[in-house]
Image (tube, rainbow, N blue to C red; front, top):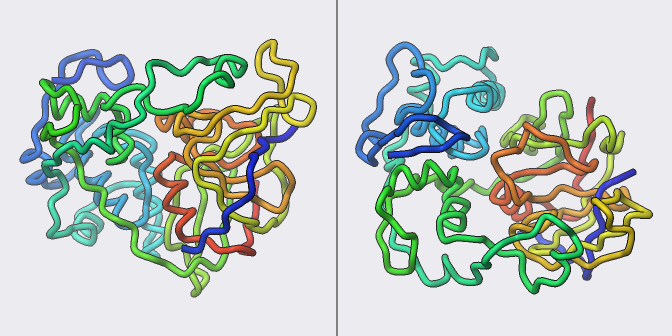
Length: 323
């Protein structure tokens, strides 16, 4: 049993919160609190402006934290370890004053943004779970403006809503967001899919890690491939060819189906094809579950991380799977 089939020719690319997921109590935060947050001796437990600021700074430094939600936890510790590895520091996963100082930037961490018509275009009412129902749709888009904007700024939806408790997330509205910045261009030499640590490590020309993404890599029932494979190409907004005879069976769906493209499709916003048939690196419709849930054998990233990686890789780059 393996991963997914992507249809279409590959285009080579070189180029106040209340939520059960984060907190059971109301949480309020402002842009100023995030921008002015300072580290002293430890990260606060739970959700805080300081942790949100740290997540943004780690994101900019190539130590990707996954969804930015302001919550201190294992994903933040993993991102700190990633930063330490990229910088050649002793790996502890614990924030200290020296790391905090290295991460600092003059660019604001939180800022205002005016929603554009393009941001909220192609919103759909709902995404069914069943693949047969999915196949009847034209586009597997975002189901709300909040979801679209949260992904645009690498944020948890509930955290975005907490920053904007009165917002409706429609075109023309000014909202508060975090500013994850733009990853600088790097020359990628090779990539390692590190299964045991649930991460994808991108190496530069000096054979040192330059970017580390949290990742979901296979599962016990649907393991990822072994060994080294090559990147064949990139397809942005791919359709998905469901074939239960080659891949896995979803529910009672025993027939082949073509699932339309869209960020909420089975492989998210992008597919990076590998030389091992039916395997690839791709996005996800559920970014909060990255490095926390299993995949059907492929390497799953957040949509924004997968899109970023797609812009950095070239045909023929090697991807090694390590246990």
